[in-house]
Image (cartoon, rainbow, N blue to C red; front, top):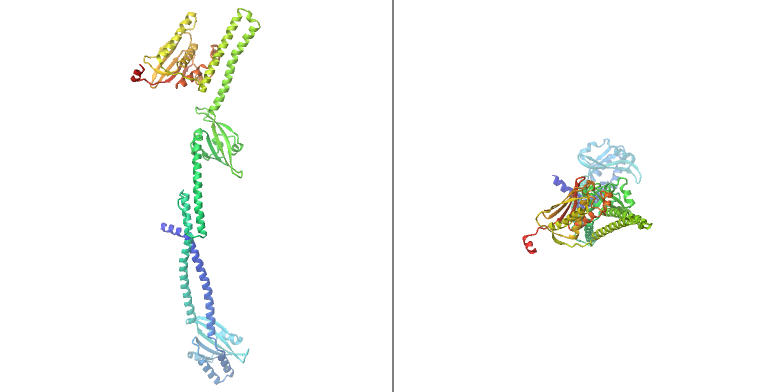
Length: 619
């Protein structure tokens, strides 16, 4: 039942059905109005014609009036003769009444006994008293009748009323004709309605068919299908509309292709941008976000869409519209106080229409974390270099001033002053050389002379040098002593290294171990192979490094104990250079330490075990 109701609703909601119904209703209304008017005129004309047909001729009324005036027996006989001679098939009763309302003659033989009686009809009395004719239609069990009461006057013109004629005529034939006419008109109306319905359906179909095709094509266009075309049935307004619709569909397709191409291009640009992009509406709510921005804020797209941009950027002190309107760059920090901390610079730009109306904004997020760190490092580097150079220069200036003022004449003081000046000069030279080495590494112009070396033999050679230094110091009476313990293994580990630079790294680490180890301390050098890496560790029993300083000891000019390091002649660049050299070998340098328990430095280098065939080739 519901399906039937749904189909009926669809039929009646169709413009085709509506046009047909409207056309039929207009046709029926027109037919009914015309029919009502025609029937009314026909009724009126038929009644008037019937009234005329039963009108007693003037000659008869004059004869009857003359007989009533005479009032003799012959007159009554003459009245009867005149009434019997009057022949009208429509008249059923013909009564002659005098001016005293006495019935003088009747046409119906069954009513002869009424002659001489007074008539009780009020209309008859009105006619005899006023002399004006009365006509009325009445209905009784016998059907519809017309009553016509005509005054009888004596003389010509407006004479004296001497009586009246009461005529009763059956109107069955008239109403029968009117009924037949109405039925004929009704049948004709129904035939016209049916023909009009068929015609209206044809006309409405002719009108709605192009519209339906345009609707069908419009639905296809909404689904992205532009292959169909509206069929043109005529060259009228609907045909012109169909052609315009086809042209519009082609232009929409071209525009859609261009928009889709631009959208894909924009999506591709946004997806591959290294900067984050946020677009907002005029209220400051996020409407577009690219993947890089989601990665910056570590959120999903659904968590950020529709939210105020000030809330997204954690700018609680200002509203989104004010943040956009100011168009000033702001720096924000995300994942603060975590290893993933990041500094972003947000740049705002308004989206304006041709009229100048602001419809939204675009915010570009640029990662300036490294830039900020580099700027801070540069500032710190300049400050450290200035400080490190100022100290020896100040010392040199003081000793040189003393020499100029006459100290050079004193044979005991002058050599000491010159020795200090030379030490400070050498210290500055070492620092400048280290800075130049770091600069070359930073610019990538420092060349690596790699060669395949047996790392066990190489380390043994380097450590032999330190053994010689221990013996030499012992001969010179140097009080500080230390021991070198080797745990290098027996397996030959062949690694590609730059021997000069690697020797510089090991010298730096071992020298630091010697400096910060107590007298008689043990320095252990261990070499192990772990899968595709070799790990070299250098451990001491020195002061150790506080946990908070472990991540900073490889920074340039960083010293855990600045006063002691400077007193021992360090530049604060050795570990920084070592880390750069190890990184150039595709390796890794790190440290582990416990304060008061000593430190261990680890060097990890890539290693590929050599096969027997490779060993044979090498031989």
